Length: 138
Image 1 (tube, rainbow, N blue to C red):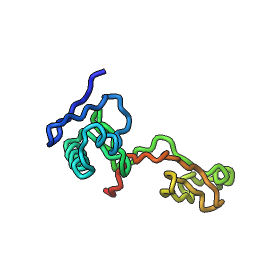
Image 2: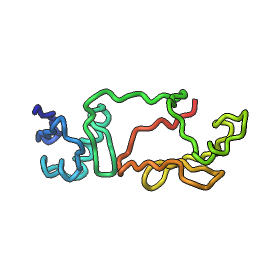
Image 3: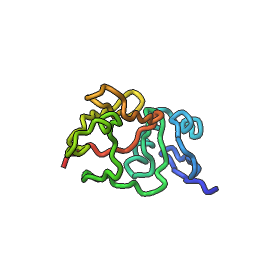
């Protein structure tokens, strides 16, 4: 397996496997004998070059392929609805008109909640991984 090599300011070389899923700050420090500050500076420069992305406080991921642009236009191809709301859907009313959903972040990830029935529609667990998101309104 081919390694990706980063030469750091001290002349030491950091080697990472292309299939290495997560890179931990302490692991880089151990591999290179850099201080925490030096390691953070190296990672910040790799992030700026688009080679590494920050996942969590001490976790980083190699960027092995081009990042996908997240659009601001409507891109939903499969809508979610409360099953109880669909059962009670009035005649000549669309699920979109009838829907009373709230969507928000939780300590686990993202939750869709039905206001009408006060029930969970969907709760996605991100398993501690930070995902790219587009929060712009255009």
